[in-house]
Structures are given as structure tokens and as C-alpha cells.
Length: 276
Image 1 (cartoon, rainbow, N blue to C red):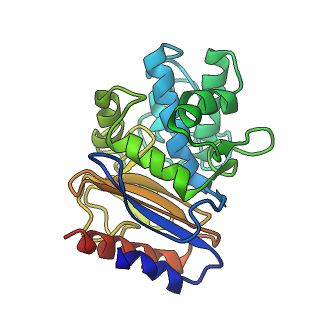
Image 2: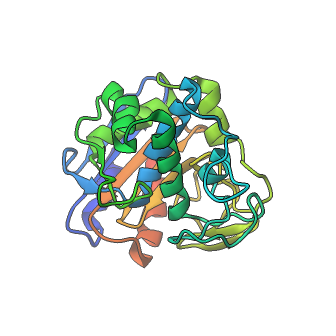
């Protein structure tokens, strides 16, 4: 895919990208160092969310079990509607009333999962997600880092396996993945999309941002409203477009900024144009 060579012109030291087809998980194109280990930042939330959904299916806890601040549940934490602030364990709104994007909420989610499972969260996510998918270079270090983002490290090669799983689930019932990625949790909730400003509404699933009609956006103008995924402050993203039947992963070593807000949508549009 010629479009993937666009990353050679990005103002970054290292970058890698891949496109994965949904039907069979085939890698349609890849460019850059596929085995290079990159900090994921908030793309880590996708992995944390998937582990939480596995925990729900295994009966470790339920979506509507209490977790986080008073009145909040596992569902609220996944959907950024617990009321917790961005990076502090402080309540700014009643649960369910506002979409307050919250690293603190995902820290609370990881704690709740670990307590319910009776093992460290990092061990649970490894055994529930990374090992069965063959993501041998991926880890979330919660000893000194946050499961919301700073603790996640992975490669494009590993994330291609995760992207294939999102499109053709083996670890979860497909209906669970559809609920998390296609159904808006707490519809009509307003909030800030980090890096892009206030959105009315700011649609989100269970851990996965749903694009819907948001503009501007970090995905391309050609991406369908059904596109879901996440981007990270470390210059990373993963999106899945169910209408196009593909996923795109890009990892870099430069923090998100104006360069990314310009380069990422252009790459996404070029990828979809390549696929016809």
C-alpha cells in the first residue's frame, strides 16, 4: 500500500503503520519497524477495556457493579462518565451526566478489576488478552505507571493481532464487542474530545471512542461514522472502520500535536482511497 509511505514524511524519529483486514485478519500493508516497542499512551485504554470486557464475560464483575466514586459503576468508568476528573481522583459531576475524559477513571477501573479477580491487573490483562492473542511484546506496567496510558508498551506487529480480534472476536462474544464499539454508552452526553475540543454529543462506547459525526477528528474525512478506536498522547492511534472492513494502526515516538492533527486524517483518507 503506497499510502503507508506517507509516514516517511512525518516529523518523527520513528514511526510504523499497518492496515489489517477484518474478515480474516490479513495484514494488507505495513511500513516502518513493525517490532519496534513504542509507548502507547491512551491507546492502552483499548487493551484495558478489552480485559474488563473479558472479566465481565467471565463473571469477575458486572458492568453495573459499583466502581469508582459513589454512584459510579464499571460501565461509567469505561464510558468516561463516572464524574472523575482528567488526572485526579476528584469528582466533578454526578455519574452519567457528563463525558469527562478521565485517566483517573481508568486507574479506578484497573483497581476494581484487580480486586474482583484477586490478582494484579497487569497479570490479568496479560493472561486474558495478550497471551491468547500472541501479543508477546505488549505489557502494561502498573507498578509505577498508569493503566490509563503511561504504562502501555507495544509494537505494530502485536497490535495487528489485537486489531484482527476487534474485527473478528475470538476472546469475546461478538455481541459484547458490538455493544462496546457500536452502541453509544449514555447517549447524548456532552464532553471534550482531548486535542479537538468540546463535542455535543461526545459519543463513546465502552472504552472505545465512536466517531459518529465529530469534526474535526483524528481519523479521516472518509472514515465512516461507525469508526471506533483511540489515539494516544505519545503520537499513536488505532482505528477500526467496520464499513470499510479494515483497521489502521500507527505508532510514533513524538507527542500528539498540530503535526498529528494534520497528518493522521490525511493518512487515514489515503489508506481508504488505496483500498478503493
